[in-house]
Length: 84
Figure: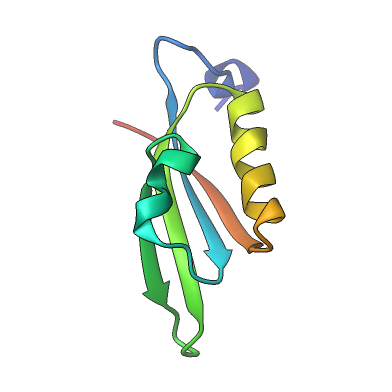
């Protein structure tokens, strides 16, 4: 992929899956631009939460990550989901 294929386009938001260590209640979806929130337990028995949804630009992505940081949730992964 070229750099041009990784640019944000407001007409075609990018889907991201963000995984954090810790528990985030599904009712807080409105805090995170209506991303789907999936609390889970990892293989070691620790609470993790996956957030999946559309992100319109890098400023929005940064804002989401900042909210997670402000809540004291450690970032485990950020994955851009490629749509076919």
